[in-house]
Image (tube, rainbow, N blue to C red; front, side, top):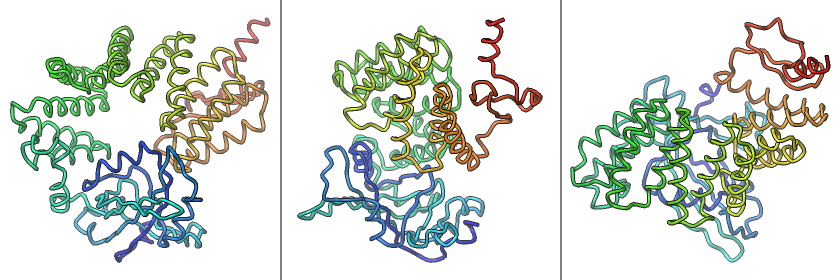
Length: 443
């Protein structure tokens, strides 16, 4: 249906968004480069409607920016893209099929690529709105060639050696963000072969990128190999990213379930972050969060609780995108410790933040609704639990690729949601494992 409503002519569209300072700084660092959108991207033909989504721009936010995106989209840039990919990267006018004609909405498909042309401030006496101008691009090499010419600073200016190196790195990063991991790995390795032997710092960066791809592919030993090469370079000439490398090594050991080695690497990373950034930096909070996860899977609940609390104190002060994850993980521990009411409070905060930050059909919202529903059930709030489960189901119906082969139902005794493999469908309607344990204890 979206394909039938594709635009067949050039168009300018707008999107108003309140962004955190951290998100905005990331945008500023990529002017002149290509960015990939890893979700559906909603815009409006009317700039006035887009501005309405900014709210009251006269209110000054210390930690946020008012941002108005303007996107120039020409469907002809997609002509040379193969037919299946053209559908995926197209854009369509959807107000007439979504029932919101007043918003005059144009939707860009998942994975759309834009060139970030420029960012400037629209400063007035009463408000400050930042304008971000984007141009729709295709994935064809010819289209990327000119755009990547401005990406040399990705490797640090003249020390990069050549524009071609920046092109390869930037293209590989886009492929990684689009989850085309085999191609990303191919370009990172090609860049590694072509870098000058004397360019050790950029080589270390390339090693780290290869390791990151391998990690995402679950090639943990391969990832460790490249991370240790990275670490060797950074140790020989102290570098700010050495802490990030220790953290990445810890995450690989965590995935391999080698928890003692993971904890050792996390402690090394934490030491570096304290020394280089202080105890209130977001990297310090990230390390606390990862260490908390490590203790949680080992059922070290008190240690996990204390580490999540430390991460929360830091993330709360900077209105972080990681904040809902911290609340969610803290709620899991509180639930296991028996403090279900405080767990509910944390689950609610995680959900509220995600509702503000994420599209209404994002899978993480489904996860939050599920967790909150389970917690409400334990408190005896069955009506609220059912409402959460309905929201979860509504979102997951839009993501059939994430739905596993299972049957779900409510335990007739405690009203908790129960999941069983479809192979054991005959168990549907029986009490859950927890209730069965309690019944055995009573007997």
